[in-house]
Image (cartoon, rainbow, N blue to C red; front, side, top):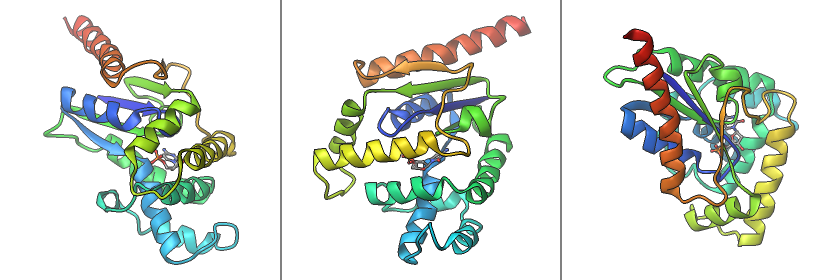
Length: 217
Ligand code: DC
């Protein structure tokens, strides 16, 4: 079973993915961490995405699923660089392969996989069993990110501005822009509590199990 969760920054993807992974015993991949792991290397090597495309593609080849286990990936500075390098088709091609291998590998002892990101339901796993797309107003998303902290030295206004910039870039890039798959279940989390969002998402997964059970019985 493959479940996908897409949406902009701060919409609640991570929380919902963790919840569903635990509830349904799924192997989880936060695909943004692959872009962030590469971004961290790009920052450390002082590379400019505008002028060092070849060097960045070479670094992308060294990224693996294990790269997502590093510390220090959750700052907005790393996220912003991740969003910049994510517009490169060559970088995406390399990281896409890692994500597809993860999605289609043997999940055992887990019952299936869950991936969250921006293009999982549309590009990485268009065949997924259940696709969820989370949205929320930019104000609420910035507030949530601010609460999370992540060691960022930015004020609420700055976080809000950086996030809007990042979303605009992610939504408008030529390759695999952030968008909901046609058959995604869309949940607007602006006025919902975490528990409400999680139980709505679980409802869609339960429907899927019920459907499968009816087909098999
Ligand atoms: O989910 P996140 O905030 O950790 O992602 C960081 C950046 O990585 C995001 O702004 C765009 C990019 N990204 C992407 O282009 N495609 C994905 N599937 C996941 C993340």
